[in-house]
Length: 536
Image 1 (cartoon, helix red, strand yellow):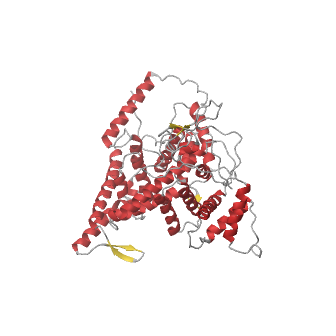
Image 2 (cartoon, rainbow, N blue to C red):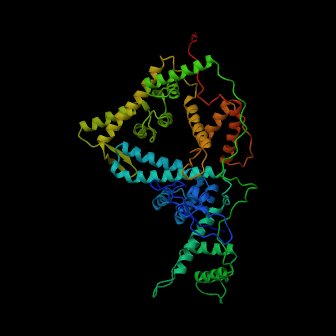
């Protein structure tokens, strides 16, 4: 079992993931006599430029754990341990680690199976914002929890992105599958050795330790091969922790260069060098030059798309989606899915998207009329001189911000009315072709695919550039549905292949498909035209 040191940084907005090239300097150490090799180039934290620790801004132990563990698919117990270990290593800010541990403990997912932390904390944010928009709590009261939540989500997304980047980084060896408990025990063991080295203050009793620390110490010593007197040995009777300290000191004297490290997976046969670009594939055969007719049609399509966007305020794909999707008859889940798509495409502001949260987070019925009914209820309460109330776990409570709820109702209703109006207006616009049946799911799949493809194309050689390839299992399913829809032949993998391995192979398959289809791009599948178009 082992831990290596490092010079990490906090995962927080104001200082998170500083560029690996920031503050580069040359080491001042004198080279050995007769050795003309230049001193290594060091960054501002004293780390060799190009090393994994310098590029990702995290300690080697944290990188080893992140290569094995994915915050989108790990237990609450392991995530709690990861945050505690990263905090001890200086790899995570205290408020972020505390918020993660507090949520796991208070919400009871420390005993649950594997969970997606990105989805969990995104839902926490939306639930809190829904309460604000519904006037149940004031923004002033929710401001601090929302800001903390934003920092947690930013940190978790960065960890997910680094996990994805490390899958193709041969300079970092993955931790063993059960190494998270080892890392936590090692952290507690290091805390214990530090306290024992400091010793008790004069006149003060020796330090006492809880059972978790005692177990961690004994387990670590056992892995090191340190022998302790049996519990029933009268000769060795005494404080077990004092005996453990004496035994560890004796072991250290015999092994002065011994290192405590977590268990690692077997190294790959050939490690890739992430500091060098991967060799490019052989260039594809040159595509046939476009004919004047095809170039003219492409130019006309671009002009028409720009005209439509200027007229309706949305990109052509979103207009195609809205033409085939009527929000007036949509379910709550569909409204939520549509809102996320429109926001991701820049057609809906964050505030407009948040205005829909009281509807989408509470699963209300009659989506198009929900906010009108709520406005009528608020007006009726005002007319009768009573304060509107809402239901809580402890009973009924007064709304904290009635005027704020009314404003949000008006804003959200305007959003829904505009989307419904666009659907109706587009029915008479033959320039916009509707998406085929299942267009909402198809659009969500394509959005997930585009994020994945962009991350893969850009690559990640540092913590700053690391972005998650996906955020949920639904994204992964959407990526594969899109690949299958466009005709990419996927290479089958063994049944125990993880998501990252499957996506890595899928990217290779897609690149091969792209080389044989240089002009093809994944796009929405459109419904047949309603009438025959006339061509000049």
